Length: 291
Image 1 (cartoon, rainbow, N blue to C red):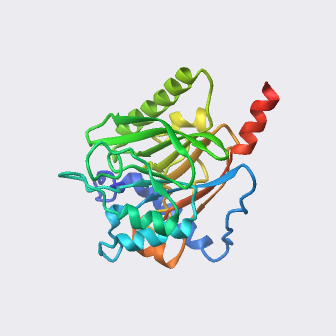
Image 2 (image 1 turned 30 degrees about the vertical axis):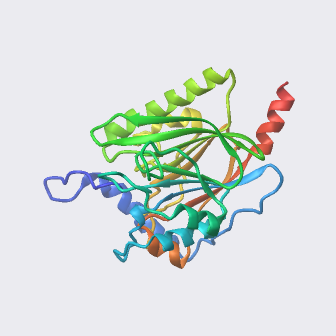
C-alpha cells in the first residue's frame, strides 16, 4: 500500500506535503533536461537486483492483470527480485501471480518464504532468484498499528553470499522509525550469529520520501549511507516521490540505481520498479585483502 498524505492543516492543505510538491516542481522542470541512463553492463561478480511494488497486480487503469506485471518483471532482467503486495491482503492471502508461468517467462524462481498454502510471500513480501539457494530465512513481524512484515534472507549466489532484507514499511511516520530500528536489529543479530558481517541489501517500498533529519528512516543512514538522491518511483505516470529504495552495505556494494521506465511499467502498477547494479566481487576482494 502506498503512503497516504498527512492530516490537513487548518487551511485544509497538508503541511507535510510542501516539500513533496517542491520535489514535483523540480521533477517537472528537469523532465526534459536530464538524460536517462541504463545500468552499466554486468561483469564477473556483479548482479542486478530489483524491487517492485506490484500493487496487487492492479494497474493505474484499475485493471487486475498479473500477466502485465510478469511482462514488466521480464523487462527488469534481474538476478534477485523483491516484490511487495504480491499476495492478497486479507483472507487466505494467496499469491496473485502464476509462479510457474513467471519462472518460464523470466527465469526467476519464487523462493519458499510464505507461511500459508498458496502464498507467495510474507505480508506480501516475496523474493525471486535467478540462480542460487536460500541459506537462512527469518520472517519479521514489524511494530506498528498495521500488519507489516519483512523478510531477512541469506542467499548463496554464484557471485557470492548476499543478505536481502525485503520490506514494505508502514504509512505512519512513528511506526516507520520503529520498523527501521527492528530491521537494523535483525541484521545485527544475523551478523552476530554468523560471526562475521555479510553484504546486505535493503529493498522495498519504504513509504518515505524525505531525506535527512526529517526522514523517519534517518536511523538507517549510519549503516546504509545517505538516503538523499533516491530515484523517484511514485506515482508511476509522473514519479516524483522516492518511496522505493535499494540500499546496500557496505559502501560501494550498490554501484548504480535506476527507476525502470517503460510503457508497461507506467501502466501495470502505481509504482515504478527499481533496478540496481550490485558488486559482490568488490566485497569478496575486500575480504581477501583483509585476511
